[in-house]
Length: 90
Image 1 (tube, rainbow, N blue to C red):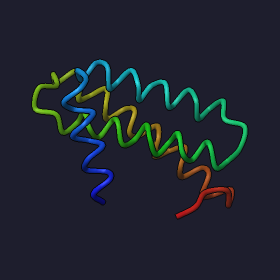
Image 2 (spheres, rainbow, N blue to C red):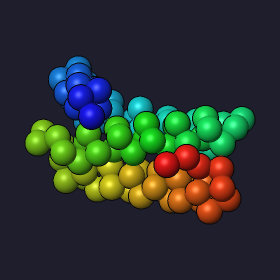
Image 3 (tube, rainbow, N blue to C red):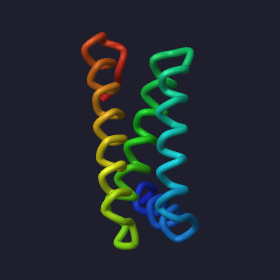
Image 4 (tube, helix red, strand yellow):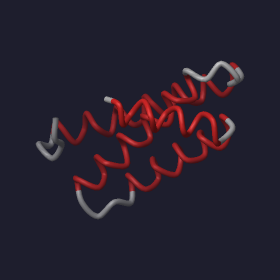
């Protein structure tokens, strides 16, 4: 848990919400193109974490928070699909 909180604080202080959204989007694209289910899961979790960072950022605009919600939903959907296929962990 401490690692996640440290990561969120580091990301929020180092980058704008737009930068974090771009990183989330890149992780989603990486998940789609991943060679294995484990890497797909890893990228989905990262995309969701980054989206949550923007959603909780008080400097994010309403449009950025809306985009973050879309990315989080997409990551969650991919993780659910992996679990249904028996390829996800946790």
